[in-house]
Length: 139
Image (cartoon, rainbow, N blue to C red; front, side, top):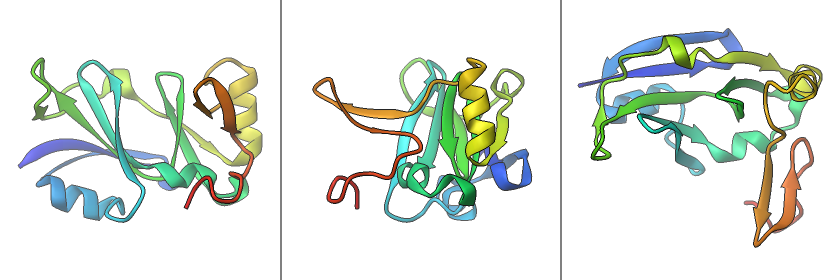
């Protein structure tokens, strides 16, 4: 069992869960296509659904950590110096800012709390939040 932090933006909730990665991912609703892993910082990883960002903003709940916007549920986990998954131990510095809909996200961007999410390929801007992706760009 590993200790994770589960983030549920619709409930404005960050809670600690102690279970297998499989159970934690399923419980967070992250067991379908689009699940992605990224790093929040050197010792913190995150699992989220990359396609949740393309849901119309009025139908989505968001959270931000370290100036980056995420959509939908997520799991945060610890990472040791060798890249191994370890228990999350410090959640105080990872307290999410919860946001709902376009207006709250735009305000956070204007206030400099988060960067506007965007996708670039070879330097070319392909997509920026809150636009819908071009046909054929995303599944």
